[in-house]
Structures are given as structure tokens and as C-alpha cells.
Image (tube, rainbow, N blue to C red; front, side):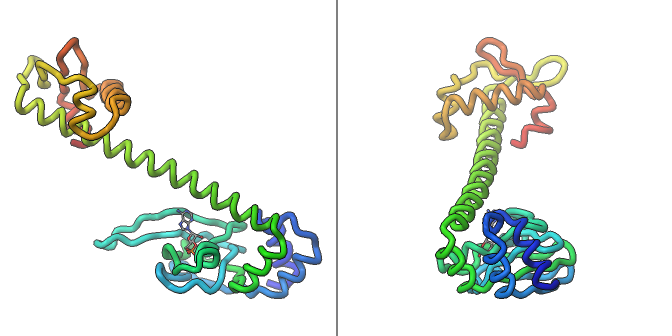
Length: 229
Ligand code: CMP
């Protein structure tokens, strides 16, 4: 890629788009581009951070590896996105691994170039913060979904236990829990709020896994197959 290609590309990236031609030309002269085949490791979690990257071509994934090698993909970035800014801003090691999903061309800004650029152009620093906020909001949403799922699993497990100790089989399949605890009691037993229990029960009912009848609950055969308990 020549310098004017790089300048054009930077223009399309949120944190550079408000800059005039002279600033972008100057920046384009300070960066290098690097080619990566598919499935290459751009950097590993815990590496020291010496540069940030803008994607000119291809896609990458931001990934953590669990103990058993299980992958947790935090995000996928594509042309026009940037990554690797965190270690340059907080001076800590890389927070995650980045691996190419296809052949990729990356524009590399060295630490000093990036930091100086932000110091000289506060509006670009605000753009970086806006992008960090966007990523945090997305992460918040994922955390909220995960912890809700976790609570649904706990509600389901408790119902299964109650069915074992206080349940009777009913005609046509399923088990009736004769005296169901109140939603408040269930909430206390699994350390969550009454509102969350109410949402979980409604969701199970909506999916046809159980019926709430007066003071009893009927767990349908599907409950045992699909509730995740
Ligand atoms: P850095 O910590 O330098 O290296 C890994 C990069 O992955 C990080 O900077 C961010 O650019 C990116 N990253 C880390 N966590 C997330 C996340 N939750 N969502 C999106 N991008 C992330």
C-alpha cells in the first residue's frame, strides 16, 4: 500500500476521520503496513503492547483461551476497525489474543506515534473514548445476558429438586409440585431478586416447559429436556 492509500484508509476510521489532509498525510508517513496469512497470531495475551493496529483488509478475532483450551471470542473486527489500543493507554500487557480469520493487511502505529497523535488531537482522544464506551456497553449487555441465563438455570434446578421431594406424577406426563414456594422464597433460595424469578417462570411457561396453576407448578416432560437444569 502506498502512502495515499493509507491516508484514504485512515480517513474512514472513526478516530482519524475528523483530521485534515495534512495531519493524515503526516500520520500515513509514520506507519507501516504488515501482511498476515489466515489464522496468524497478531499478538498474544500478556505480551507487552508496543503498537496499535488498523485493519486495511481482512477480519480478526479478539479471543481468550480458557484452561481447557476453550475459546471465548470477545469481538470480531473488520476493515476500518482498530484494536490494540488498550495496552497503549493503560500501560498494561495485552488484554487478549488477536488472531486473523482470513488473510489480512494491518496498518501498524507504534506506541509513541499513537500517544503523540492523541495528545496533539484531543478530539481524536474523545473518539477513542467513545469507541471504548461502545465496546463496554456491548460487554455489559453480554454480561447481563450471561448472568440471566445463569439464574434461569438455578431456578430450573431448584424446581427439579422440589419436584423430587414434593412432586407427584400426573396423568399425561409431567410432575406436579404441590406447594410451590413464593417467588420471594425462590429468590432467597437461589440468591436473586423476585423480579428475576418471575421473569424466569414466565419464560419457562412461555416455552411450554411448565404451568403455574394456583399454588402448584406442573413441570412438563419438556422441562426435563430443555430447561438446562
Ligand atoms: P489490547 O489490550 O492492547 O490487546 C487486545 C485488544 O483486543 C485490546 O487492546 C482491544 O483493542 C481488544 N479488546 C479487548 N477486549 C475487548 C472487548 N471486550 N471487546 C472488543 N475489543 C476488545
